Figure 1 (cartoon, rainbow, N blue to C red):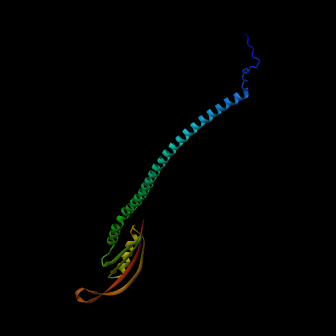
Figure 2: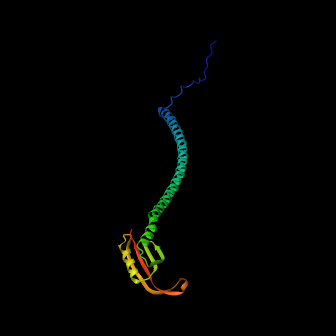
Length: 185
């Protein structure tokens, strides 16, 4: 017996091919996603690298600041030492002046004159003393004017005065004088 099936047979339809633009769009999206992922990973690693570099540079900056502070302290110390050295050199330079001054003042001192006081302020010298005669004072002033140590010699005052002399209680006439001298150099 033959059977005939009159019911329509459902045939499987062949699937329609996927349109090309969808395939291209999917492939392009995958490529773009891969590119974005690759870029994200690179940027993240670069960010980590920059953060490590920043931390390293900040550490170097701190070290440099410490060294700079030490250098500033050193420069201050050097300036202090140079200032002290200048003072010492000036003292050494001026060290011989009092000795030369005393030598010159005493070397030119004639008989009949004695000194009471000698004051030095910078380059100005004030001498106060006594003499038996006014001509001894003039002789002393003229000798001091010839000295190369003094730039100027000025007799400020010369007065006659009487002082008591030793055990005899006798008054002796003397001349009290004051000189103003200027030092050379």
